[in-house]
Image (cartoon, rainbow, N blue to C red; front, top):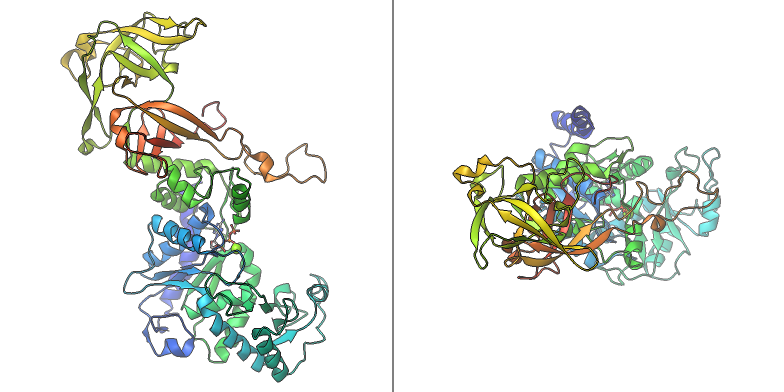
Length: 597
Ligand code: ATP
Ligand code: MG
């Protein structure tokens, strides 16, 4: 994606905000310091925040990479305009919502580096705290003739809704008096009816071309326990009614949501207008702006599908490093700044697009390259014996912690007679162009000496169990004679006597195809693919690696570049001092589909 495109695409929301600020549209709004209806806000001082945005997750799952895009956008706009971004739990649906999800969402937003409690405000809210206002607002709509209780069955309501080409039919209950509606709605609240017996509907226009304006339901009966309000309510607001009110109560200026809600905008505006007319809300009202959601190849970004992967034990849990959840990303070692870079790079637009996961991976790689210290790890160890190096002797070699940042210094790595090298760095009969170890060839042991291969040792099956070599004592890196030896191979190694054995988890893509669950050429007609059929069976392999000794005490979550391999993070759950466990975050280069792993 060109950077030019990014700049203009980011601008479509910024342009709206710039124009609003230029016109002073929201400048006279008041803010009481707390969410509330218009009269409460008007009694407060002028809102110190020129813009207010919000990130409104439903606490029914862990956050995924799509949410990261929305978080970076909403919190980023508030930061750039000196405004505020609220974290609001949209918990108006009593089923499926849990405190565990609330905690995980708080942790994920903080991890991404954003805060909602700055400038003397603490803008963490729960939509369920607004239920009383929502009921009061609904009753006002009833009194002003803008809502009625419908007693048709769900099936009858569906049938009378009409289609895109035919108008809907008015419910036989549409002309109930305000008194009757109010009495019925109160009885609904009092728990006098079972689920589905009645619903409260907005009274708009059954012939509206936009089906969302054909008297949408706004409150329904639901005898269910809510994670915060318990059994206090048995009527719950519909999302499309609740959301605009939440925005208005919180003084939100720009309510940014994904494109699916574009057709809901007329109802959003209709509802807030009616409530403002009745003096319940302060003007100017919040405005809804839609952008296209993030779609990424090789992952599923839907809580429903993520829950299925977990419940069916296809992955280890919400923080499985293969999942596109922020908890998984953190455990895998993706840095939060990598998400910021990614959000900036893909930009924001109104057209649907599918982003290649390699763009995300490249953002992680670039961020880690900047900051991760270098370390040495041998992932597929083979013993190298230096026959002319004295037994029992050890010397220290110096390796830079970061080639681009000399200020990070160097560390000592012990060198001795027996080392671990990568199995692929030796070949008995190499092809042309192979510059590593083979009998008669010389290669440099990085930060150490040049060695010449003299042969190898094999077991009874002919497998190579050790490589033999001799070192050139005057070739030590950093000493005056070192440059006299011109060799092409430059190998990494760890001293066998000092190495720390560690479990390393090599993660790969969880799905083997770019669009899990999508139809593929040649699929039989009428057969739906299941996204679970597209799982990559090789998405995790466990190996025992040999690490340089300084890694044995790696702090939980610490990220390193293992030279020649990629970026790895110490696992935050299973790693122990002296027995580290590392997760591969991302390889050094994009190797998907190229035979590499
Ligand atoms: P899911 O479909 O995975 O359940 P959701 O949209 O229902 O996602 P919410 O908790 O309602 O999840 O989302 C909170 C916010 O995150 C919403 O404002 C929504 O627009 C945004 N969001 C969710 N998914 C994406 C995505 N893929 N790309 C961008 N923003 C997203
Ligand atoms: Mg949702």
